[in-house]
Image (cartoon, rainbow, N blue to C red; front, side, top):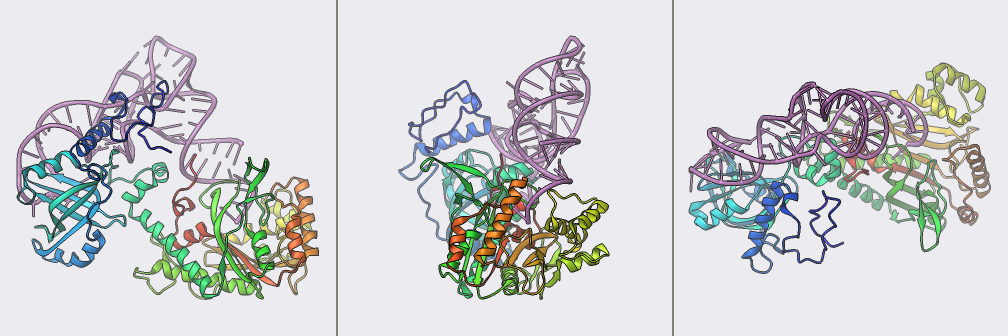
Length: 529
RNA sequence: GCCCCUAUAGCUCAGCGGUAGAGCUACGGACUUUUAAUCCGCAGGUCGCAGGUUCGAUCCCUGCUGGGGGCACCA
């Protein structure tokens, strides 16, 4: 899309300006439409471009940096201990101006690098001369990207600075920088995350922590000989989880398609084909509520490993998360530990071997009466009624899970695997090897929310078909989240899938566990209307 | 889907049934060591949108839109 300044956007009567104008000319729009601060910067842009050689001006193709602001600070930061000291070293760096103080013959500006590191530029009449100083004062604004070259010094007040001998605009900002001393409101932080990243240290930390976490997960998988694959996001059937899908349309095929709610059924096809240790990190889409722990699109990790079961996959999951905690702590005072620090300052220990508790056992204990897979729906409904728990389209499994959440979930803060679920709600999980009526499935709870789920995978194609049929019946009852019968997947299973353990983990929620943030803070650009 | 709160200058926010305020930013000026400098001067708003009540609405009412929170559903 051609980039042009949409100066007419406030006036719907006015047709949009043609975009074939050269970018350097002034768009044909009455200047009263543009608010003052932008208009002033537009004029400065023109002046910068006016006398400029090719590649110079307000937006040069490159500036002659010799190093970076963080590198200068790393090498010369000690100068701050001895104010008014010259290093003798000359550097060229560029950064965004986040602070500016123009006085008569000596100007100060703080340049900020992308990681938030700052260095002070000092532009002195004695060093740059009258013309350069005047142009600096005339043309350089808060928010601009500026190149400066000069000697690394400490100022009289001890601040690490560069005594500028040459400066050049690196990129002129037309939009004014927001106030750096008050936080942006929630909406602006999300809609204009770039401003949030410029302004707020925690926003930058969140991005770095997420990147390190992803890196760590891939490293752990790599060390265990896993292969990373990508499976379809556009699917002709939605399956692999209980959720309402988004529906879209393919023009080429003239058919409705679903955005995937889970990659499970494709990853299992991959396992049938011989990918014995396989994982995927990618986006899922669920057309459901959005709140502090739910986002319509969310990143998910799924992993399958043959010849292990839900116990082995729980071990893997614990390793993945603990390694991620180690990675998140690199460079902090907690380096080498599994204790993560949340945004509110809380220290949270992800170390040690996490408890593995029984769903029916802990429910029975908390409810004060024995609840087993044989407990009747009537009895469970009676308990639910007495407790004020409402269950949509109740069956045994849903009731047990809802009652468990009601009685037990809120008490769980430390990482805990909740083991052995009712069969009705777990159509892709195999029966427990020794306990009748339950399946070999766990949910991992951290900080009171479900972070991951793991199975001993159901590989018997006949039982799988029965489960799908049961799901189809649930769908017919009105359960919009139930899966359909996926014949292609069943055909793959009929070719033989080796015994395997599988796991799914919400990446955004993992970040929540590591940082203590809400889900929208862990996602760089969460969905906004 | 339901309920509550919310929308005022570029940014962050006050405010009031009688027609708009602050700080920062911006603009003009002074200042060679500033740290949200200081001093002087000066701009900037369809008070989210559309209706209604009223002599008069930014304020009260209704609807709509965006945002936040809670409930329901969900991971």
